[in-house]
View 1 (cartoon, rainbow, N blue to C red):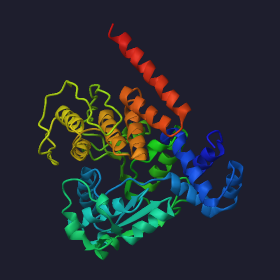
View 2: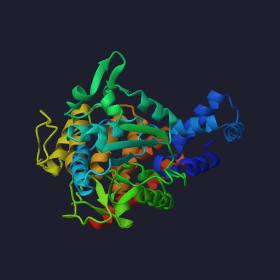
View 3: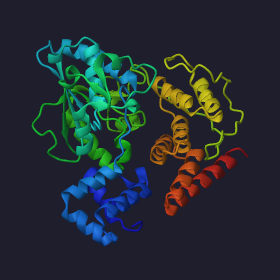
View 4: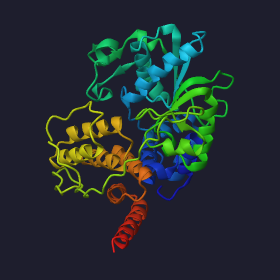
Length: 419
């Protein structure tokens, strides 16, 4: 099935997925899994079944989409939303409820975080409503269930869990007060009739989605997002997507780490782009990663603070390397999240997250992080080589060779620049 492009084209048409953003091996694996489930003996047999069954079409999409989210991911976005929501209510003189959209909403962590943030900020239930959309009926159904495991609660501040959840044997159930603020439904951003004839939204969250599309689809999706966002509204995106919006006339509102963009508000000050120094390429194994001197000051590996916006970016990167080299994966991951909460996104941080996921055996998660690193820094040598090794292990030899060639070109260019 590796040479059959029909499945790639199907996913591109249905959900806009660019095969290069996730790698051919991920899609091929999903096709193999679904072929086994449906007992299709050949690629052609499975393709014919796929064409004749809407349920199977959705099942293949579900097999490719693996949601990765948690409550209050990128906390500053929600703090900024709360401040902007109060200002927006004053601007419209409380004449209507604020309209907020979250898409893709995945399993519900984001739209429920929006509701919790606004309730905690003092907004009354009648002052806002949240709509969550996702292409996956399975994810939407899980979101409607409102029960979450510990993996949905990450970071150092989870006090909100005490306020907005009740503990049950199967997990933590979100309270009706929060649930009633959120409406959830299935929807596809590529559907030309999506939310047709509905008023625009004051705030739209669409994070870490554009990076999975090719440029034409990015433009198509951006036009939809722009139409859904009120002309005085704000669009929240993922850390690696700012340059995309900038190319389409949107501007950061100037609040660091909020990843918030508007059509009319000029940035207070351009957010600096931190370019990390190259890091050593640790071994792809669970063994401790051999340390190597880095050009950052050494920081103790003990007592990792979660809230430290004043922490220097270089110190955090050095701390990540120290913890990873000592095999303290959980602590290293926490500092990566701390970095992303208080500094502009850096390829080196996503590279470390990929490596930590790789060592933990989470190949799909690792692949996503490596690709984010390469999105920010296309010639990042360690990300290229580790992603190549990962693709090779998954049977995608062609994809691995392409990345290895890029890495070799990068190494040659670097050597020539030092002469």
